[in-house]
Image 1 (tube, protein in one colour):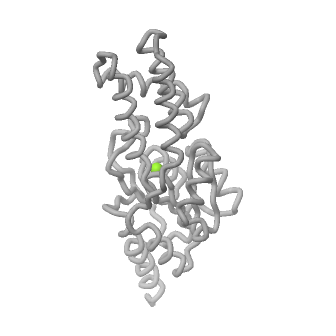
Image 2 (tube, rainbow, N blue to C red; image 1 turned 45 degrees about the horizontal axis):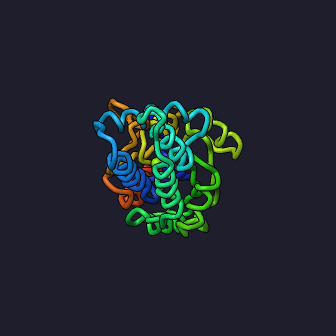
Image 3 (tube, helix red, strand yellow; image 1 turned 180 degrees about the vertical axis):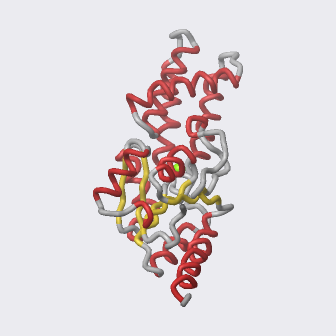
Amino acid sequence: MSPVLPPRVIAFDGDDTLWHNETLFSMTQERFRAILRSHLSLDLADLDARLLATERKNLAVYGYGIKGFVLSMVETAIEVTDGRTPASDITAILSVGRAMLEHPVELIEGAREVLESLRARDHELWLITKGDLFDQESKIARSGLEPLFDRIEIVSEKDEGTYRRLLDRHGISADEFAMVGNTLRSDVLPVINLGARAFHVPYQITWAHEHVEGDLPDGALVLDALTELPVRLQAMGLSRSVRHDQP
Ligand SMILES: [Mg+2]
């Protein structure tokens, strides 16, 4: 049965929920293709598939983030050229990777206003983001959103065990917790499995690794835009006051 009270603690994903991220990866992948295609004849779909396979294989070793992505691009370049990649290509790949790390953080429309309005309503706000610690810390600082959060957690994976540990550590029950994020795999499914609520705010692009097929599970709500969140939460709050007012 769904809980009736509105969630007190609202946790947000960072990448592609509060700030743009996947567009930067797509843009860089375009540049990677261009670097290799300048002197190699390659099928683009095949090159993309090889890169994705390398990234997936390396996740367990490098974790999520830009630095792992750069190493995977270098490894893929070496593989598709049978070890004949010129050093100038490696330099170009390192350079596009560095540009990613230094790219300005662009907030999703309305992100700051949404956080401010929820704080004003006494929600406790968390940020739960996964990936490279240094890169995530830098992005959070550059986003300017850091002061709006009561708690910031940078984790290496966002699965059921991670969410369970975070809730237990801070003494939060599942029915007072809701997660807001763009990926079903990391932000929605594990949270719903714990009995908490989740708001899915799809982004324009989803990394193939994060893509899952299927319907939204019970307890999850889909939003067309992050800016819908305050109204949807308010609707939960109103239903609570109606219940309490009943004789
Ligand atoms: Mg995300």
